[in-house]
Image 1 (tube, rainbow, N blue to C red):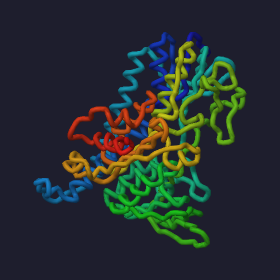
Image 2: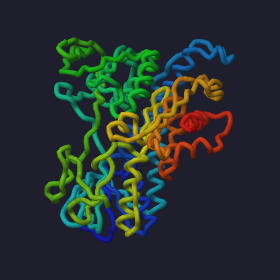
Image 3: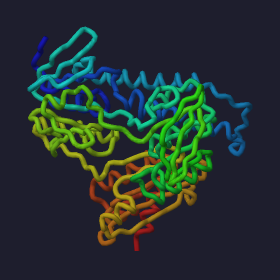
Image 4: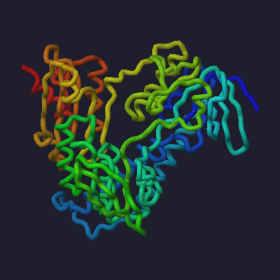
Length: 460
């Protein structure tokens, strides 16, 4: 069965897809969005949102279990109801997924449930419960996201060798968990289960955690996480694993030394890959790169006219907010407008405790690019609001151009860093300077004053 009259068919209803659908509708397009799963994609269902729900719940448990006596709050014995914690997480996911459905109804976006593939010029074939349906359209936007990467010798079994998806839904707290990969996902999920009582060992191939982040700030976070109970084994890699009953024997290699770590489960969190299986890219003539990502031009269009791609399936950081911005820009380009994404001002956040957020250049990146720069820092322990919150660990680090003082980068390790980093993003978006931050009035007492004071350290 073939149908026409769509201006745009989007394959994938994650953050990039559903945001693009809403924007395209506002621009007057008739839009269909194809997805085989629940609305919201990986981010909403088995990624960003459920992980943050568990991070919040586990942090509360950890804080209360540690005692609030110094606040004058005296409690009795504290217990853990993991099922209730998981139930709260699921309720949040269902609420937000329902919100996406409401967004589609409000914008008259047709949700087509099934697996979509390219079916020739201007066609998307959807395989659903009632058979195949062909959607004819002027434009196609691929927004299918990404999937966890498996390691050789560590194939996911969903029980003992798990991905982040299974780590979000464990029915009991493991006695011991080994996390392979010290990136954001590994540290966040390791933090959740460590707070809830598991022994957690994080194994990282490099000599530092959080590759790509500022090494100084990442190093401080590692020390704080060790204080909380996480163990780290750096410059090590996983060679393979054997499941024996309800235990896993994980083989690790560090230099010329080999060792075996016994644990209840292994979380493999070494990154994600573009999800392009069964899309029909090759048959449609759409070019991909050496990593399987769809190649696009500055307008997000592939080498095939009328086919576009955004988010995790194209080059760049695999972040939900990056996909959203690309989705908006792509449909604006289709509509003849000036869509744009400022890639230098895309923030990254690690939602541990404390949080680590960054935007722009790290100090190492500034050095590699040969930039003449200056560094300004200020500690949270010098901030009154941080003391009131019992959250004095961390700092703000600012990178600015030596000659012009233009803001080049900002790293925040501390309470509510995911919120505070927006100030750095905004200043970079408008081409502002560290002095602009220093001379902007910040409320007192507030955590944002740490940013202001870091900027003042750069002023003569």
